[in-house]
Length: 241
Image: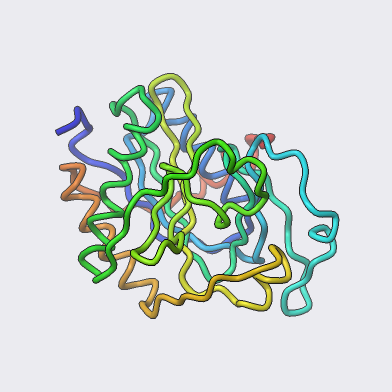
């Protein structure tokens, strides 16, 4: 068992813009790094839908700047973490901010991702780590390849993409769980689509992963929404991602 705080904070699911979601993630990382907050787990969705780019991903197709979904522009958002582009439609994002895990990046991914493996197994879906090497950087589509930071099903379909950002011993790990993407939109963005759908409600998935997180990390999750003061601090933080 890792050296962990006995209680973690659980922030209830939020559906706001991608820029705000990324600002929340980065702000929570900073607060935990400064010792102001315990570790945090949260789940969220994106509204309006967006394409998130990895922090160091500088090039992407020009057509992405002009995409729409249901007559609304699709936002282009930059994550504070690495990795490649993710289309946030028909997905669920998880986020963990914590410390006390291995300094080795691959090992820490495995330690944190254990709650995902365990939770999805209890939902009847067996997942495994991907094996793609550094060649993934040439593919703009995060779900087009699967590295050791990602989880795939028995047929090789990438179900969960993950990315990290570190500040000292503090880790922000977040990732997208691909559930029910629109095949036409996915093809429009990335040029091809590997069809699969997960017919489980968001509520069922979140509840299962909360139970799994408590068991895998050996902690108690305390439900605590963001307060008005915290929202103001996040909005006033002027975080450049």
